Amino acid sequence: MGGALPTPPDGSQDGRTAWLVVAAAFLSMFAIFGVVYSFGVFFDPMAREFGTGRGLTSVVFAVTAFLFFVLGAMTGPVADRIGPCRVVLVGAGATGGGLILTAAVPSIWLGYLTFGLGVGLGTACGYVPMVAAVGGWFERRRALAIGIAVSGIGVGTLAVPPVAALMVGSMGWRRTYVVLGVAALMVLSACALAARRPPAGPQKSRRLRRVVRTREFAGLYCSGLLSSFALFLAFVHIVPYAIKLGTAPVAAAGLVSVIGVGSTVGRLGLGGAAERLGAVRTFQLSVGILIASYVLWYLAPGYLALAGFALVLGLGYGGWVALSPSVMADLFGWEGLGGSLGLLYTSAGVGALFGPPFAGFLVDATNSYRPAILTALGLAVAAGFAIARLPIRRVTSDAEVRVETRRRVS
Image 1 (tube, helix red, strand yellow):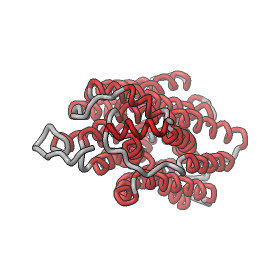
Image 2 (cartoon, rainbow, N blue to C red):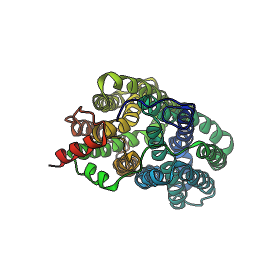
Image 3 (cartoon, rainbow, N blue to C red):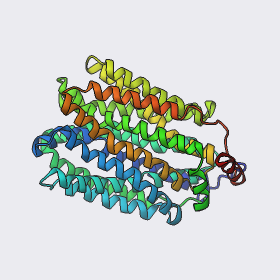
């Protein structure tokens, strides 16, 4: 990129409109991920009502996470071309409708469709397009802006699960999903109206093909798959695991909120550290923190130790998510970020699809969570090795993108 652009009142990079888009992105991610990461609160009530084990119940979340990451590979390029407003509006309808329909399903199998497709599509529309929009609206303070925007994920994870747990306790899981569905529809619709198309150029498909052929992209993709397998295993099972240890449901749901606290700190704190250490090195540090968290989980003797695990997990996860766009930009440039970032996130979708059900079936077979926790630890270590040799060099112009990607392919 060239030098910093001027900062007019609105309509240009780093201006008032840019910060309005940041606010819309924050609220969008607050709403969609607050809903998604509250699933652990609904896990046991749904399993009891439908008579399903942990493996089959976990598939609801697994399908959802798989779809929102994989569909992000489509919604990102679409938003690059037509702008994020209409894409987020589709996400508002899909999320609200999916939750309301899930409240009426007579079997877990229909829940795979209503929650999985509805919330999965809604999250894909409200996540990657908004991250890419924020990146396109900023030149000088891009890392800070993205850090603030994606901290909506952490704040949503902090705030929504305890509220959902109280609502489930007082009105049941079905009515709770209706309330959440209406709220998500309203919040995401407002975000769509504020989501403006950035002044950045559209994605070039030839550039995207060059990027995905590089060794660096392959390493990031492999690391994303392994990390997400371990991460979403923990996200889905930490609440039922705590309940199995004798923790009250609301207190168990509070562990997801602790992840949200750590996630928010990780997004902002590690995002700031990236200004000094560089995005790539700080991203590697985030994966190292994830590895440490699974060691804590394996050794955790009770609720307080589980809370420590949740905090450290959130810290590593927050940095991992917040820094992914900056790492892609450092390595390949900002042009067409929606498309390249969406494609990278399909790796997380595959990991999310298999991680929670694998752990659920393993727990059903062994009546213990320890084998699943050890699996998560081993996969996180492998994810760290996959990105251990990423270069630090920052690509700052389209010309450098072409030179660097050709060099890496060769």
